[in-house]
Each structure stands twice: as C-alpha cells, then as structure tokens.
Image (tube, rainbow, N blue to C red; front, side):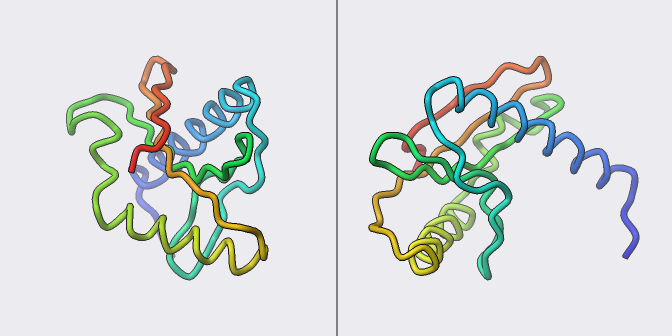
Length: 119
C-alpha cells in the first residue's frame, strides 16, 4: 500500500496534534484511557476520564484555515461514528455509559481550542 507525500504529511500533522492535545488535557486534570482506539466503526483519537465522565475526543489539526476551522470537519457522519464507538467501548469495558463528545482544534501556531460537549 503506497501513500503519497501529502498523506504522510497529514498523518504526521495529525499525530503531532494528538500529542499536543494529550498534554493539554492532562494539564486540565483529565486521565488518558485510550489513544487511537480502534473499533469496527472507526478510530477514536483519545478517550479520557474527566471526573465521572468519559470524554471521546476527536482531534482536528490544520496547517492553515483555507478549508475552514478544524471543528467544521466534524460532520454528522463523524458524530454518528463516535456515538457508535462509545457504545462499542462500553460493551468492551463493561462500564456504565456516561459519555460526552469533545472536539479539540489544533492550529498551525500550536494553539488549542478545546470544545467540551461539541456534539
């Protein structure tokens, strides 16, 4: 399977954003439970415990805003996949569902906009 240089750049940019968000949420007192959690419905970037809630976090990193704000890339289909991923997570961990869905925007300058209960 061959990947273009653009695909590689996107993957590197995305992983860098995930590391920045991971550090950010740890500073907020959240505990990382899973990174790049794969399910039959897709991959959750981060799953973290925040008090009595489990946050399913979609990280969107952009090198520029030519195509809009990062959060605008989290459409209805992505939201529905995250809801299915949460149900899958509960079935695998046998824990009580108390989820929220957050979006972390990472901008080219390293700035993070963290949106709790984004959807």
